[in-house]
Length: 151
Length: 211
Image 1 (cartoon, rainbow over the protein chains, first blue to last red):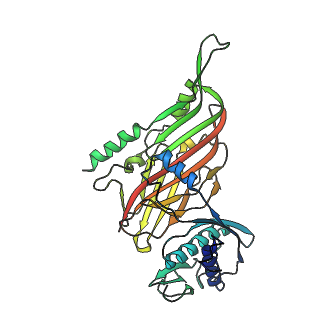
Image 2 (image 1 turned 180 degrees about the vertical axis):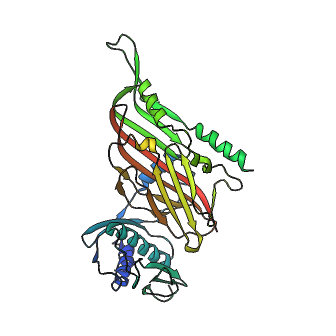
Image 3 (image 1 turned 45 degrees about the vertical axis):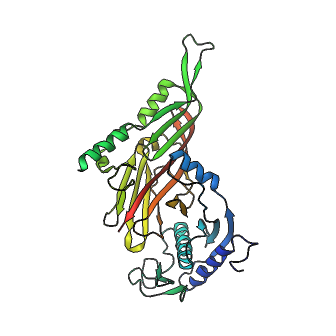
C-alpha cells in the first residue's frame, strides 16, 4: 500500500508502523502487533478545549490528519495517536517514539526496545536524514536502522 | 526587576474567578427562601474547572466547597509565573538551561523542561491537593494536545489513573524559538458537600522554548 493510496486515509501510518516494527525485530523479544489504525476527527473536541481556555488560536488553520493506533505488546494492550505531519524523517521518528512510549507504558519496567548489554532501553535517533535505534550513551552509532539512507 | 512580576502573578492568582451556576431559589414549602446550585466553576490562570453535582446544594455549601478548593499559596508557589505575564514576548520563555519550569494555579501544577539537545520537552501535570481531595474515583485524561503556533503537532494518549497521579509525557519535533500551546481535559467523579457529581478540568498554556 503506498502513501498515494487515497482509498485508505491511514495508509501513510500503516507504512510508518510497518517500517518501525521491522526495525525492532532484533531489539525485543516482546511480540508487538498492531490491531487497528483508524483515522479520527477530533476537531470539535479540540476546539472546545481551546474555546474553554480562551487560548489564542486560528481555528481555520488546516490541521494534519490524525490516526488512532491500537495494538498489543505481549499480553498488554496499548494505544497512541499519530499525526501526518513533518518530513519523512520526522514522521518516522515521531512514529517510533510514539510506539515506544505507548508500549513502554504498557510493559511497565521491562525496557523497550532492548539496548544490548544495558538495562536501559534503546532510543530513537534522527541524524543527517537517517533514523535509527541507538544506545542513549552512544547516539551516533546505529543499533538498528529504521529509515536507512537519505530520506 | 523580578519582584513586581511576582507580585503581579500573585495578584492575578488571587483574582482567579470562582462562580456558582444554575442557581435556583427553592421556596415551595420552605419558610425561608434558600438559594441552591448544581454547578460550581473555578477558573485559574491556566485552567477551567466545572463541577456539576447530581443534586443541588445550598449556596452556603457551594461557597464552602469553593473555599476548600482555594488553598493558601504554598512556599513552593514563589516560583509561580503567570501564563501571559512575562517580559519580552507575550508568553513565558522556557530555556533549556532551566531544570524545570513550574506553572501553578489553584487547580494544579504544570511542569515543563525543554531539552534543546534532543528537540523535545518533558512535561508533567498534577491536580491540586484540595481538588484531588474531593475526587471520588479515577481520573480520565483525554490526552494532551500540542500546537506549534496554530498547527496541531501532537496528541498524547488517553489515560485512566488515580487523580493524584502525575500525568507526564514528552513532545518532540521542536526547535529553539518555537511557540508551543498545549491543553488537556481531565474528568473525574467527585463528592462535594456530601453530594456526588462530576468535575471537568480543562488545563492549558502557552510558552516559548529557547536553547
